[in-house]
Amino acid sequence: MKIVCDSNMPYAAEAFGTLGEVTLREGRTITAADVRDADLLITRSTTKVTRELLAGSRLRFYGSGVIGTDHIDIPYLEQAKIPWSAAPGCNAESVSNYLTAALLWLGGKHGFRLEGKTLGVIGVGNVGRKVMAKAQALGMRVKACDPPRKRDASDAAAREFVALDELLAASDVVTCHVPLTREGPDRTFHLLDRAAFARMRPGTIFVNAARGEVLDADALLEALDTCPPVQGRSGGSPMEGERPREPLTASIPRIAHTVIDTWEGEPRYRPDLLARADIVSPHIAGHSYEGKVNGTMMVYEAACRVLGVPPSFRPQLPPPPVPEWRGDAAGRADEDVLREAVLAVYDIMADDARLRASCGADLAARAKAFDQQRKEYPVRREFASTTVRVRNASGKLLQKFRALGFQLAEGC
Image (tube, rainbow, N blue to C red; front, side, top):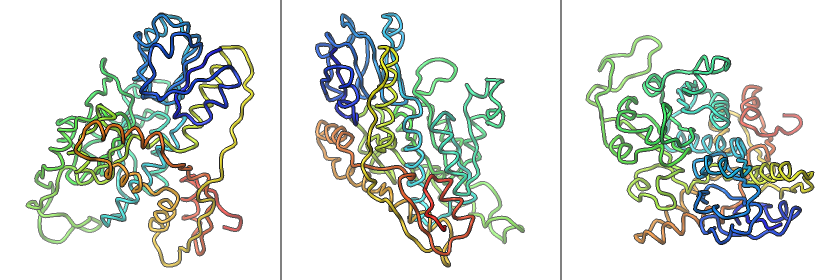
């Protein structure tokens, strides 16, 4: 049995080697000639799985080791009666770790607290739910929007979801975790357009770690430069319990800070958007080691089911780079302690620095570097791989660490 696998999938050769002869190819370079005599094709999102790629092949199974399916021609697979599987939820924890690190870094850099702010989550699937849980662990309020789930009368959790306009107007931070769809009532292509940004409050933080095409980049760049009048009273003392307000003449941009992990036209991306964003990365929010291994294993087990054989491979993960983190909470705000721990485990600005350093004038070189950084991404383990030992920690702080996914040392 011949099996073609994306070389950027950990343990692909070892896992699928239990089923047949494995040929590794870079995902974006897989051709119809590679697939023609293959029985199994296993990729990530960089391979466009289309009629042109598969027609005339003898393929018995296709597996995609990522959450999204916008790179797959599902109608053709079904028409050709080719069984297939994606890996929903495989890297949800990874993306929620990315969001946690990004928001904590922004708060530390720009001197604001996350606690008490409102996070608006657009798209409440596997990733969105994890992001909401992490935000609540940080003391944030959460608003969620997911129209397909809201219409499902049997989904009790969705009854609390709000309309997109309400979410945009009420949120201090807006993050998007929707699939890319180009048609229908829930179309997400350029969901975040000029009209959407115009509904956001001045000073909003915007994050896109979904798909690049969900965002209209020109609209975001305009929002970064637009300073609408601040609503509310100007001058005088605030009312009891009210935060001090900016005067109506204050220049606060519609979007104050932005984090961009996914880009329209990847691996080609817009340097003008990169230059304006606070944090940038080459579509690696879901690239924790656990997330990628989960994707491999989910499609491996699906292939075994299709072939009618029991799975016989189990991965042995390497030791984490940060097996233990020690800190002291004495006299410190919880958020500062959490920030120190999170950024020690995941240095998100190292991802930012690599992409910025490779953003030269040559378009082809930029695109090549984008893909190379994804392929050679350093081992990043999820929070659960690290045990924290914190002196002088309150029970509330320890609960926050636990809710973020960290392990607690005995005696904490």
